[in-house]
Image 1 (cartoon, helix red, strand yellow):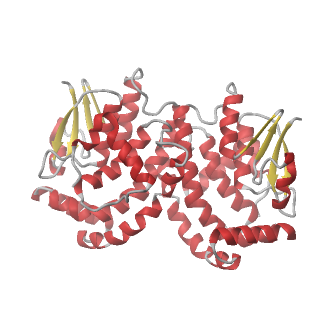
Image 2: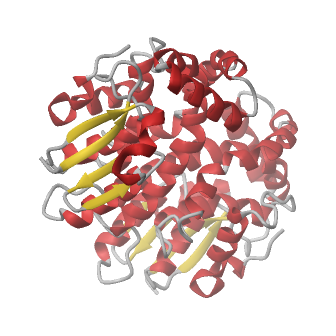
Image 3: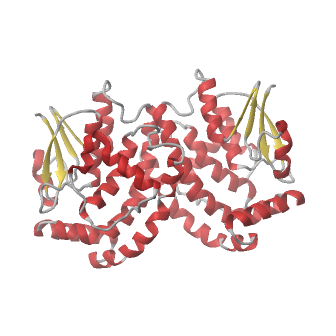
Length: 229
Length: 229
């Protein structure tokens, strides 16, 4: 197969956990495109494809090499227009950037605080050093201090999900009656936590938990192919 | 003209301020449809069109009567498909519900706290009584207590806008290169504050302030047809 998805893993190479790579895995499955996953530790990423990227996902699709989950989704929509749509129109491409913005600036900082210790524990020692350095730089404090803020972040996570609950009163997915790339943007964040951490971010009975379960069921249960931590 | 937009005003009938009616005014202008505005005080709303609604916007379009800003946008998109699109595809209709959710659950509660005293001051006495009772029920506390939380809400408003700033790094509008109904959803919230309150919610230099100014310029400056408070 010529299609390769470069992915991120810890010491266990069978448990890819990057939220951004999960967006792309779901996008490929949505487009009914086969792919091989190439798991990499953080520090292995810069070595592949002649140093094409320092971040995953990176997609090799025949002659094409595309990085960034959003750009990959746009590429797939253009390259495979006859397959099920990831955006369903030009308008959705613009608005999806807002959903990405919400996920990146609201969900990710909170979830990182909640699961940072779990991620660190699952990495190879060489990747632990990279992870500690890069995250301590990002947060401007020690990894331990970030982790200590996790309990408060977990407690306040539920109220941050109100925009999703409002939307779920009208429909089953962010995309409407069926999922679109925007669903995978938000799914990636919760799937990341599900795979690396035994902590429960969503409580049963929450419409967001029901939506997440529906996403896990998609594409022959692709999301469930990696068990919960 | 057979097209009428029932709108909300205070004692000054030339200054409609409802965020939801502004969404519809911008939607109509976007579709290049003429309309007459019918300003109403809160307590006058239930009397129009044989008691069709207790909330505005309410649109009379010939034989059709449609309420709710989102439903009106969907109606206009279907009724006037040859005019500029408000959604630009089916995908955007779904995702717009998430933007509505974000606006309703993140922006509106904060902005209400910031401007609740300003709104109250601008109403006719009969509407002041209605407004106090309905808002005190919603917030579970006195109008004065809600207003006291306004300073803190104003201070933390900027960080709530990060999803917009992320999006504005890639594009000029929520809709992408040009505005869509999703822009009007968020515009309505800031326009509401602009019209009723002298407080400044957006600081110059903020990309969100630049986006809001672009929205005010749209449709021959429709948003500027009511001056800032």
